[in-house]
Image (cartoon, rainbow, N blue to C red; front, side, top):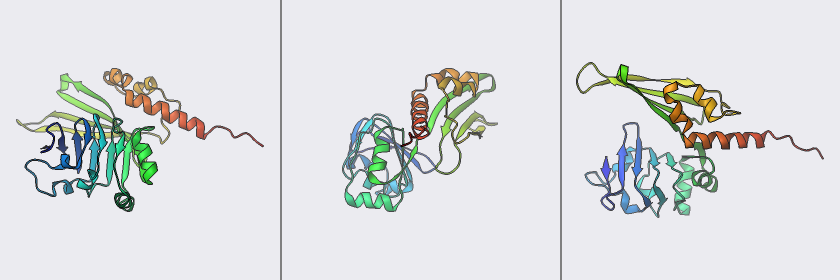
Length: 225
């Protein structure tokens, strides 16, 4: 975890997978990427930058602090990303992938800059099985190539103090699994313990609604001349 020297409310959460999450509120500026107890090129170790909910803008030269990213995930609170022609060209040459929700600034930004876009993964539920001392984190994941899936990340106590067991598994979904699917129908496919969280999942509800509207428009019969 890193803390910005410029703004104490800006926090970076680092993951060994190459993912870097930035949390905060309001706009971010270039100085927000200068952090305590890290080298000058600390950001070069990450290839995915996830801008979390609450941040509204990436100001001038902010993205230049992360020259190695090949994926930028923008929450729906982000309404502006400052770039210049040189950065636009670098992003296109690097084939930067933009991820976010449909009908948000993230999708518009990708289209305006000529970049690839993929819907962000959707956290579905966190389920506890207290009788087994197990916690499952369930996520709906999307891929540029291949079918979407439901990912289960299971955590259980290990055999010794300070260690953890568990594992991961996935359930593959059809490419157009969302067609005609409601939140209620989606919840029926998973454990009853996750049902309430899924029924109250606004991101999932938005995805299903917009995806079905787009599907209907794309398959609407054309009137003959």
